[in-house]
Image (cartoon, rainbow, N blue to C red; front, side, top):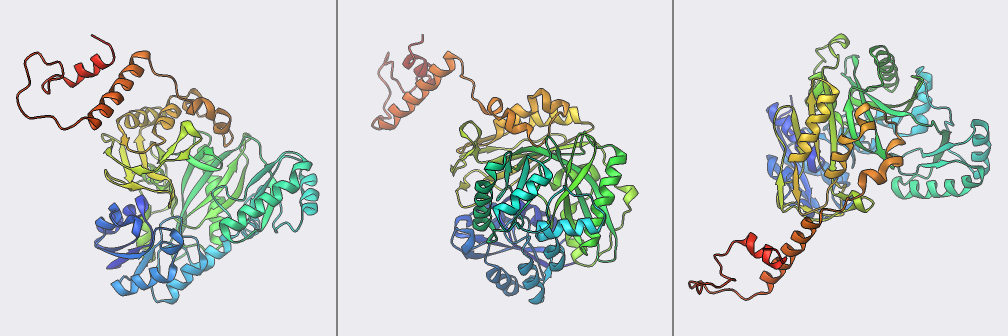
Length: 506
């Protein structure tokens, strides 16, 4: 095992890796930007190195500075987490060329799966079913129209180098195609530096189901079952669970076999995820492979008992996987809610500010993977995800009730968050029945994010409290002398009574 690992990330995933290292007796080096100088991951690591200013292009995306920090501190390996440089083939290669260990798949596997068109070709050769579509980038709107006419509308335009919904457009009619293609190419170029876009048949009402794979350097490749990730807004996952209500043991085995075949075809080692669309008939189609640890990995950990991050470290250090496929059967049910600094009632606009107060849920079966604390400054420089709230229970209905309870316990003051949205999801009849697909949330978003008007008394009390706070801020400091008897504004008077009087209540 390594003696020291540099964690090339921030927030909750940096803390997750630091904790895994600590349990293995491995020292850690954090990296940080000016904006993260007081972040929890900086404090929790054994050492920390400043990379540069707040913008990620000047800090967390500076591969040369990260490698230099690893060498200067004596770290033997680099764990990239997710996002930032985690799926950059050139960075994995640069780490290896610098004589360090890359905790992730080989650079060649990242390259093989990094382009969605190349990944489709590889999956086809491996016998893994894919959504009907092109395997090369579109050269013109005319070519796109020819392909779309062949498949039939609607079709989906997708950035070849993309992810997270960037460079993606659904096209329902031929006359929309040229404009949508130009828009997708422009967004792809801005997001990934590559405007290559391809087209595939748009599957109506599918589920997003992904398979976790884990392989060592000795030829063993296993799958750890599926995750249901169909609750999505603008192609961004918001709630994940394992297993899926739509996947039987037989279907799990078939999807797992297909994922393992695709991973082996890419020469994959370490942890990765194959993403699939699953239609109502039980047919599944390969979408892409994420060549890194996933945000939603905790739900798989909770139902399998396998610490994926520790095994990333162990595999990179040369260990063999000690378990067999037959031992990896899911037990119970896990659900994860992504807690973001966004205002659902206002179109999920980002919310910034300081976390004034934080109360984290606890109790049986509750896990909090967070990257914030009271006093944390939330800026626009990075992804809005603050934390992940994960629960485990014996079955899905119990897991939903446990998540509902945990969300009620969660308190974050100072910034708007997605907590109330998740509460409403746990109360929603469709979700509770598992009757969802990747287009479900967009159809029901208004009812899940609308703000019901509070009762009149609550409104009056809130206004009164605000008036009182404003009056007290504007008032001069009071004397500490004893108040005059009968003075209604006495310092010893109940604050609640003063609020009631301001509100005209007796």
